Image (cartoon, rainbow, N blue to C red; front, top):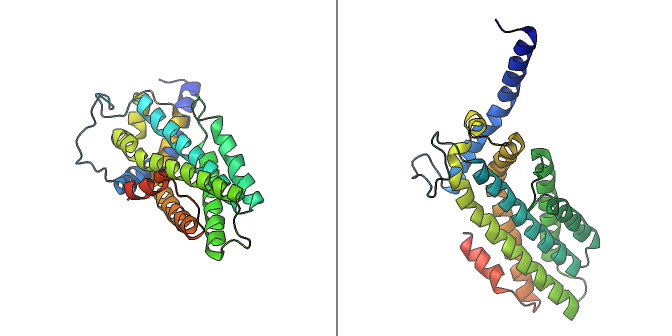
Length: 239
């Protein structure tokens, strides 16, 4: 018969699983927004293990690629805001990009709550930019501000392309949104929760970013600002 400490450990594990499982189930449904249903064929190159769970490296790749995409987006948003004289908004986006830089490319994984806060910042900056571009600049853009805006378009376009590329990452882990399978495959709980947040949030974030990029391209064309090819190709490729 299990001793008292064993019973407590089992009870704690059960509570933790009960708290996490609903979010994981929701994430599995949201994956269908990317066109990945249960009827899809299995990914090549053994992304999934024998038990159908994605390998930890696949989840890690999804998280790191998401962080990289957001760094590009936030950097682009910062440049766009700076070009339009919105120093406060530019600083807000740059600070958020700085927080991500510590985790992207490293072993650290931001918690789901941190990712949610950063997503909120990205959305807020997008709304501020779109409002400003709708009103138009109070003063004609200078050669310097035009170049800064063009640089921002390039970075934002790259970020949108990387967001669209997350579809393949999500495809490789579509069968992993089952917490017991994740744990059996040896996934880090923090990485698993971050991947769950991404599966839930990335589709809506991509749609919002495409709207921002579309309006930014239109603003550039109206004001004689060079539009990088990556910005236009990102819009056509992400549709």
